[in-house]
Image 1 (cartoon, rainbow, N blue to C red):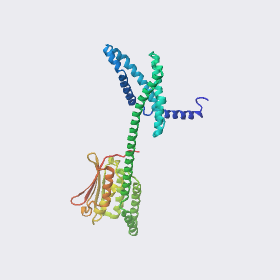
Image 2 (tube, one colour):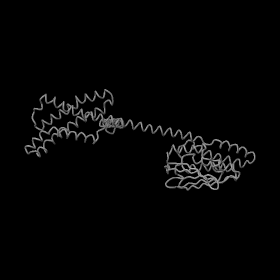
Image 3 (cartoon, rainbow, N blue to C red):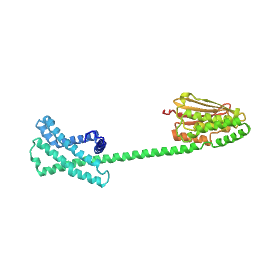
Image 4 (cartoon, helix red, strand yellow):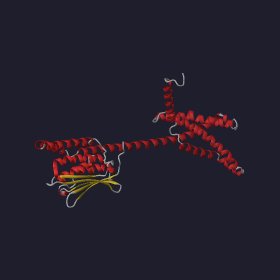
Length: 383
């Protein structure tokens, strides 16, 4: 088989990828912090083992020579065995059962019959290579070394297991918090959709009734109103399913709505949309501006025999988006700010922005109402 065999190459690549995944899983948790912790414990162990020798060397005036020679060798020996045995325990813990008595049994058997004997063998080999005598080959010494390294590696394993359990508890708490946040967001979105669906339904029926009446008395005006209504529905219907929009998109919806209303109200309605072009890509919750305009028409301008004028203006004020819907209608005697539409806007603002957004109503002089939306700036990313 050649190295470039097109049939075997994918299989070889798949086996290599599986091997890399297994290796990463086996060594999971092997961090520099844990290696440093083991090194510090080994150093303390080496110093404790050689404490008596250090006192003798101090009295004999050879402390400096002892410090250079003995603790360093002892530390290197202990650290080598601890890291080797610890690596065996790490691999067994990562590849074996992750919970329950099976994990305890695996770790205990690996500790007693693999990791501790490996550390003991390394210690014996170190003594023999260093020419420190063959007394270490005595069975009692074997048992003593095996017992010592089983205790040492058992202590390391217990510490690692406690750390692992704590990390899993923290991860579980973190996942639970993320799930709670996601659930809260879904519930908020569901509430917003319910609130958003409570848009004034009478507009559509009233407009269709006006279209029918106009076709009986003025067919041309009826066709214009029907055309404007169709344009309004083309703009409005997609908004019903959206949770995000922009100032520009909402302004187009408002303009289509006002064109329909101007046919119905005739010279009684005039309007002005004063919104700079550079503000039209700023995010604005859907249908919110339309609700304010509907409220101004229904409660402010329509009840007046002579109608009135409506202005929609937007600007940046103190790093916030401010939108004013100004009318010169009947004012607070007919629009006190307690209607369903305005209550829905306030509920949606609270759900979406908390206390960082507001709707305020102020009375104009000599008459009319100004509805002001104040929102944090957020530009919708481009396609």
